[in-house]
Image 1: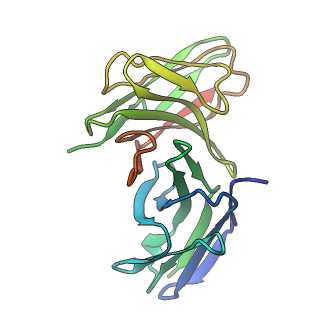
Image 2: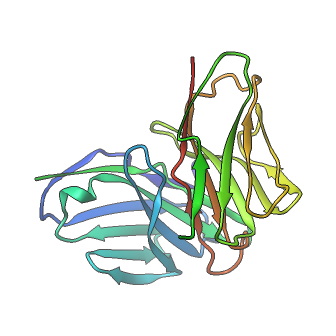
Image 3: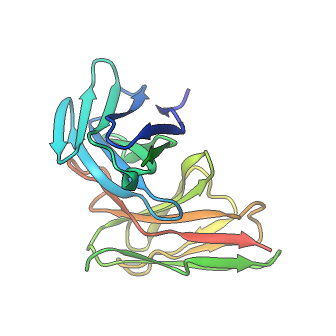
Length: 111
Length: 115
């Protein structure tokens, strides 16, 4: 079983839709959770960073962590064609000094 | 601007050649990493370094080598022993590996193709 599971998609939505991207994990020691956006042939860029459980909002993006279910989500409101990219989740357990990544979900927002 | 610079962006290697990918960061980060990304497979850790003159193997180190002579620099050599080197290579850095509140930042990547 992988430490982090992420549906690869692709996920195709119309412009303006609310997008929900998700990851599940198996290690209860994970404390820090990140979402990255990666455009084709580019390096991943950090979108959201959260600690432990709860929600964090930044503009059109909301990151949600449910540690009891070992489940994290990224919501994108009013999605735009420029949001079309691959989204990677990442997790860190400071006890183990290693970042764990999901395999990425490819999102396509149609104009 | 602070960031991570990788070069070259595109590189072609002949069979049996060694090639070196450059990675420089000006974020004053202690830890640096090299990942390999293949289509549909996510990121796989090749090597990482927490401090100058020290580095550890990641999950797929065979056929690769690194050095960390300066805090800012962490070059990766893809040797002829790497049987399937065609991939997208990402360099990354973080403040201190494992520190509370830490996160990881990436360069723009280098594409390596064997011809």
